[in-house]
Amino acid sequence: VEWTLDGGWHDAAVHAYGPLSLDPSASVFHYAQEIFEGLKAYRHADGSVWSFRPDANARRFQRSARRLALPELPVEVFVESIRQLVRTDVDWVPSAPETSLYLRPFMIATESFLGVRAAQAVAYHCIASPAGAYFTSGPQPVSIWLSTHYARAARGGTGAAKTGGNYAASLLPQQEAYEQGCQQVMFLDSEEGRYLEELGGMNVVLVKADGTLVTPDSESILEGITRDSILQLAEDRGLRVERRRVTLDEWRDGVADGSITEAFACGTAAVVTPIAELRGEGFTITLPTAGAGELTMSLREELTDIQYGRRPDPHGWMTQLTDP
Ligand code: PMP
Image (cartoon, rainbow, N blue to C red; front, side, top):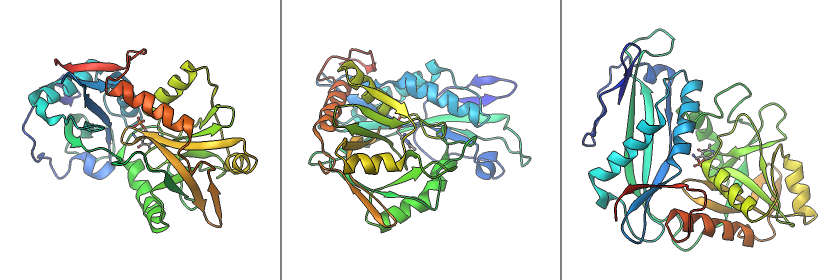
């Protein structure tokens, strides 16, 4: 779908996958005016294909658009683009356990103009790719590296938007995490370096011994749809959920005195991943359950059961894309 300042949204079409033709002076190449989303389509036992909360991704896409001075794509156009894409070839959507079709909607500034201003021509696209099971033998607890030299996002910046620049900024710290033998990098707030923010591509939740879930509240993190869903499922069970500032010290002290028993990371790709340990310069916090705690695993199972149609969907999160 194309957008111009004069003409609004127009020319919706499904094309065969292939290179995009863009002018070398297209502003996306120079000023990174772009946003994206990530969501999945799941095949249910009767063969029908469903996506999980696409309206929530569409609204987050609109919030990202506002921050990046891009036009807002109507929610219906976003959801319809996914439906049309999946329907071009339903066999794309794999049916083996825990597999899915990963969908990647994105919007780029295409105007050929080297002045620094919001582009007056924009394109929205959505591509898709089958995704294997993230874990082949059940969720593997991960080790996380705490980045102390780098911040992912600053107050007033673009941290809450899903825009490429945030990911460019986290590549180097992510590499550091790999070099330390960890699978993910953890960021703290950029002002005081005390408060938990999120991982390179996932949100973080701590579980207390009494079943309370605690997760960082911050203006500079991406509001994960997986996190929001997991927290709602926890509230449905009558568990307490606290969205507030959380310090690194609280995590360390809580593990030391036994009041924090589990921790997990969550996001569309891996759903819920137990955290085994958090390491940084000169310290290690090791979770007592090596991460794979009971509550973490049961919330993971409840959410994936809803996504794959194995249990009722009380919140109406699933959107049907194709018939059985
Ligand atoms: N934070 C970041 C930085 C991410 O890239 C993602 C993945 N989109 C998340 C959190 C989790 O978001 P979601 O649950 O919507 O996938």
